[in-house]
Image 1 (cartoon, helix red, strand yellow):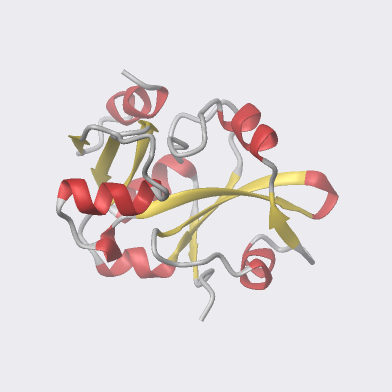
Image 2 (spheres, rainbow, N blue to C red):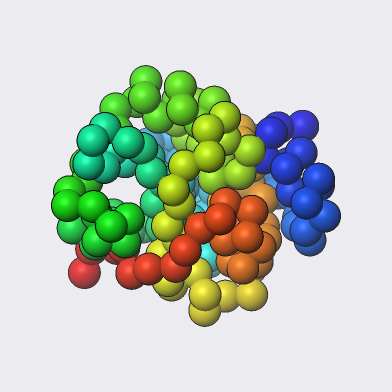
Length: 156
């Protein structure tokens, strides 16, 4: 069990776990999930940690094949600018290692923004807190659990 799975169970939301053998030589964790689980890439989302004004951290959840728009993300978080957090900041704040960062069960509750594209699916897939483990849940449940909001945060 991971903190992400424990949180989903505690909140009694509907979810499905999907496990696959993680290959450490794979260059993209999200692409690996798409390939090994045989699911549409548009439904697999990655969890990114960014630094916003004043050194605060925030989470962006976007499709794995997309790039986070720092301008849009700053706007969504009500700040002037955003940049990717460094690896150690992200891992320390979330309690997860890169490639296994889940938006659920993080050590610190961070402002969370989910790309609006998630709303077009009944369910999406995000990391369940470990490389090789994804959790499938509804975008609305994800927003509820993370206290997240929906906003267009991907680069065009």
